[in-house]
Each structure stands twice: as C-alpha cells, then as structure tokens.
Length: 443
Ligand code: IVH
Image (tube, rainbow, N blue to C red; front, side):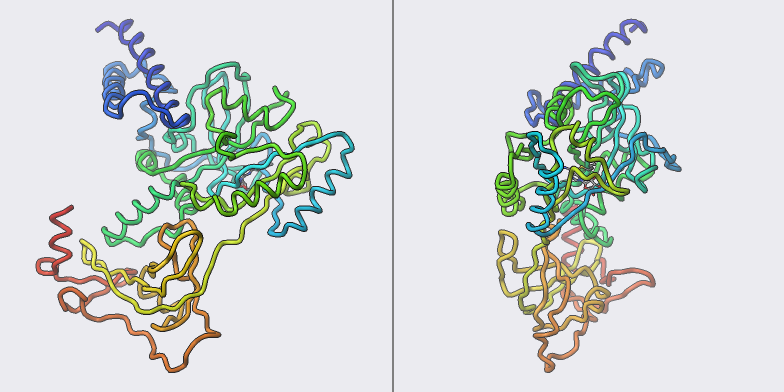
C-alpha cells in the first residue's frame, strides 16, 4: 500500500469509527455489532502502526489508551471553576428563587438538571478538536488529565456541525454503578480491598498514570455548561442543545435529565420526581442543580468568591435506615481472602429490600464497635451492596457478647492468617479449601 492510499484509508476508517462511537456511546443507538467495530478498529491500528507519521491526534485508537503520564501538569483555568451553593431545605430554595425574582424584573426562567456525583472536568476544544481536559483542582488551576479523558468514549475527540473555533465545556465524569460493582467483585476475588464508592473511584481513576487502565474502567461523562468569550446562544438551555448538535453527551430532555421551569412549583415537581426516580438511574446523583437560564441575567447577578449567584444545588439526604444485625457470616474467595457479610433483618431502603450488607474486613468491624444482635444504620450510597455505617448505641443490649472475628476458615477449618499491613484475613489452605479450588478452576 502506498502512503497516499494509507492516508485515505486512515481518514475514512477514522471518520467511520467516530460516527459509530457517537452512535453507541452518546446516542445509545448503535447500528453495527461490537465485533464489526473491533475489526475496523484493528484495521486502523495496524495501518497506524505501519505508517506512524499518519496517525491523527484525534484517532479513535486513542480510546484504548496507552499513554503514560508521569506527572500531571498544572494548568491555570481560563474561566475559574466555581462550586455551587447548596441547600438541603426547600425553604432555602424558595428564598433563593425569591431573591432572583426580586433582582430581575424581566421575565426569566430556570433550568433544572441532575447533579451528577463524580469529578468535575473542563475540556477545551480548538477548531473542532479536543485540546485539553483539566480537573477542577482548587478552582483556579487544575491538573492536565487529557490522555485519560481521551479514553472516555462519550467525550468527542472531534466535533461536527457549526461549532465555535474555541470554547470550553464543563461536565462531570462519573462511574457507572454496574461497572463499579463488577470492579469491586474482581478486587475482592483478588484479595484486594474494595473501592469505597463510585465517586472516589472515578476521581482516583482519572489520576492514574496508565491511560490504558483508565480505558478499561466504566467511566462516563455528561456535559453541563458551555463557556466562550462571545456566547453563541442567549440561554443556557439553548447552548446545551447546540452542544448536543456538535456531538456532546448533554443531559437529554427526553429522559427528563434537564428541563426548563417557569416557577417554583415546576422546580419542586422536578425535585420530587427525581427524589424517587433517581434510584433507577445507572449512576449516582446527589441532588438537583437549578440554574437561571438567561446568560445576560446570569452575568448581571455575577458571583461570590466561591459560587455563582444564579445557580444553587438542592441535595437529597442520603437514605439510611436502622435494622437488626442478625449475624455475621464469612465468604472465602478464590485467593483465600475472607470477607465478612452482615445478615440483616430485611428492611426497605431506597426502593429495594435489603437483607445483606458488606462489612469489608475485621478492622471495619472493630471500628464500628459492632456486636451480633445490635441495631445498625444501613446506608445505600453509590454501592449496589449497601453498607453498615454505624451502630445504633441507643438500642444496644448490654448483654450482647463482644464481637469475635473467626480464627478458623469457615469452609475447611484451617487456621486463618493475616499478613502485616493486609486488611483481609486469608485461608492459607490453597490446595484443599473447596471455594479456593473451585474458584481457581472457574477463573
Ligand atoms: S454547574 C458555575 N451543573 O457540582 C456552575 N455542576 O459544587 C458550576 N455538578 O463540582 C457547576 N452536576 O462538578 C453544574 N448539572 C450540573 C452539575 C454540577 C454536578 C458538580 C460540579 C461541581 C459541583 C458544584
């Protein structure tokens, strides 16, 4: 193949893969099979290996990662990355709306959105190409994590349509719940400590040095604010819909992820809807964001040192219930790692009936001061498996005996070991302990 032929083919394959990537990850409407996609990707990869000088900076092969970042460079934000004032109370939210109504006599509307629980990102584009992705950091400067963000398939590397020459778009990178649970299952099997929650795991993943590992993690991203020197739209809502045309994954109005609200009643309607529906989402949200829609009004209101005066977040209280800890049992993993499990008196929590909760390891049990028979607080955060957060000492029966962690393997009676610095106890009987043997065969 000549260089000219290769160049043409690389351009065609890249464009085609870009299109399918967008259909799959942004629009959720693929038209070719995963197999066909992978074949085309491999074809492109092999061409790029043959002609490395022809590889585009926006190549779809970037999605698989491979770039190692030793030190993340510090970047000063062109526009400061503010945080949001937040409230847990509907009265305070009413005051916020009333304040805005008082300061702006012109007609104005609000936009309600989900508050994604992940890590904030600012991504700049130049001439339709992703240029830089920077973390929030301290708000005035953050870390350049471009190589890692390029692996997130819902973030476009090239744009289409009538995009401006230069702009920045802000959004939230988060981890999908199902992928998070799978990641933790795999970690437990390996005898590693599970990750605490999807939010910290998402931000931890973004700071990893090997972008190939990041590529394998189930990260996703919704974009929620467009910034440029001369805005192309008069309102926030319209700018979101424009960004959608350029190829971004913005909150879809079809799924009620974003909605215009004319008054406080419509805002509360949105809040109340998501108060229950949020448990059905494939990712975590921790509240709702309410923004003034009109950019000119936003600008007139300005900001305090930390947050804009034209937006606020209403946070949901994380759901917690009290129930009885009937017993603690132990699971033995493939590597011999022991995981204690709390067996609970079944209780309704965040839309499901909870019977079991994870306890992680002996240290955590000790930290909680747990005893079998105690009433405990159970919380469903990002985890699919709920966790025990505290003992309800007001209900403690003083006759309960102190907790004793098992010394022998529950499966084969071998004495357990715990290495210096390790969180988990292990059963050393690799050759004879049934769940270890069958686990290895299955693996
Ligand atoms: S707007 C100037 N919209 O919440 C407005 N923020 O403390 C800035 N967040 O770290 C933010 N979902 O990353 C906005 N729909 C949404 C959001 C959102 C989540 C995060 C944001 C920031 C924090 C605000």
